[in-house]
Image (cartoon, rainbow, N blue to C red; front, side, top):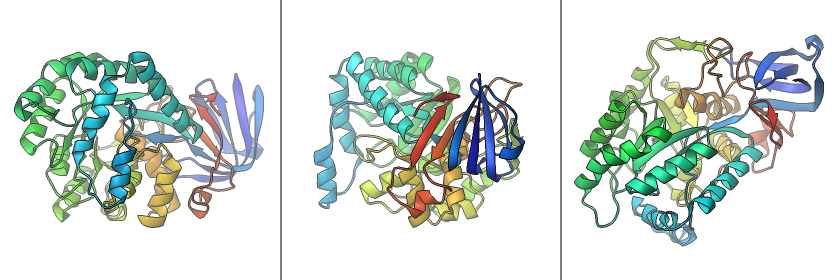
Length: 409
């Protein structure tokens, strides 16, 4: 079955040529993009959808979420808004609620959050464990996550549970807990931050997870300058997330990790030229909720760092899955252009997850951009251009969503 989507006022491909097409059309065949170009040149298809002069984007790729949880942290939020500072310790509240919730309800809650995200244009999602913090509950969270999202990350190193010795817990994260979650996860992460895991502990976690064959990610430099960014680059992590407080050396290290990598040869069925570096993932909704300085997205882009935007949807510091809100904030307050912000929320997220390349030949379909052979993840706005995302902040602009070629809204 093929579907022609025509009468598209603006098609923002986010492909390797960064094309923005006017008066465009797209043909979807099964789960793939089969054709795109001028509407006047469109081939016949089994069915047709009139976009009505609206803008079409790739679906959002949300590369950083924490969706497997139960409970409520409204009181913590109210206290923070009244002037209390954020610390990592609030995670323990969610851990208690998550442990006491059964599999059915934990799955139901996660599926509801995924549905909310998809309804707002998100078509590819990562999520993490990290609210179990013992072997059985981390394995359970990983198993449930693997049934509801596209990419699962092991975050046993989220916080040291109350009453446990930090070194003993790190040993558990690197040993039996890692073995228990391994069948369900592709990535591993560590919260390298004061109040969470030290540089030495983080290094042990990253090394053990790399030895186990997992891709790496790092929570780093959220509450102050620290070793997170440097560790991420040293270990070749796919991304380092938060990056609110960066030294000049941190920016230089991230930029150097991309030297020799050619963006022009990626995102359309290739893996780019040269060695890919560490994506800097900015989480602006979290920054606003915790009243931290916004990550320096403009500085990072200008330095040559590849940037992603993600929601960080979680119960304590960013209880939203609205990628449009993140894009709007990046434009209005982080000084990104609309095109740069949309790219960071689509192609950038795919790059942070290693899913920016793939086509008909290798069968691993790329996400985050619109190109022939890529997965048909599409987001039709109820607006004639993507500029309206920032021009009309807060407005519900999602008109239709296709996820792997299936109409999801």
